[in-house]
Length: 253
Image (cartoon, rainbow, N blue to C red):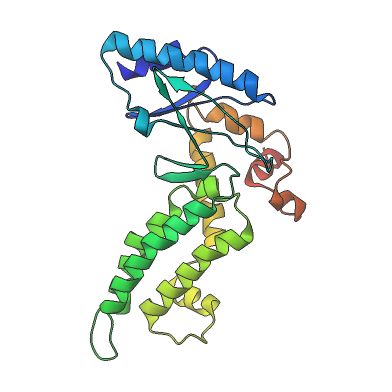
């Protein structure tokens, strides 16, 4: 029944996963965007009333993505409730901020990984504790998996922001190997068979791209990726003479 929800969306795009849904619209005029989104919110409210669904206004928020320093004013209602406009929102486990810096999300990952690192320290000692192989398994299962999740999305963050995760890797590998602080991280990466996160992210992005490209034409993301592959995006990577993965696939297509 929830799969019928997109049928009432006439002005916006919609993403759904289980009971988590999001609608969005792009434009230059905030007033125009507000009117169009409000129409679809009214349609969603009518659809929910028809089928007996309840939407929690406290869990429903709005966010404006803009490069402008001054935040745009947005007034949206769901039924009789005014939606809260926030600067960051968590959707499917990823924290998205209004400037798309991904700083909040990466700090969130760092905080979760720090708890695991502290537990790993408790498992080690000079003459006792878990061996390097066991610690590496813990690191891969409980730390690297968190960092890998959503890396295709947050990879557009600045290098200074992504370095936060590099420090997490360095700390984890030192615990696994028992190495001193003056040992180079690159040496630990070779010893533990764990590549730099920047290279790992590019590998995961490549796998995701190939996986989506191999699907049938009805895959919801395939069309968007095909459009991205037709031109160079003026991103930080392009300005630093680094070609994006989408451009590389178009070049060798």
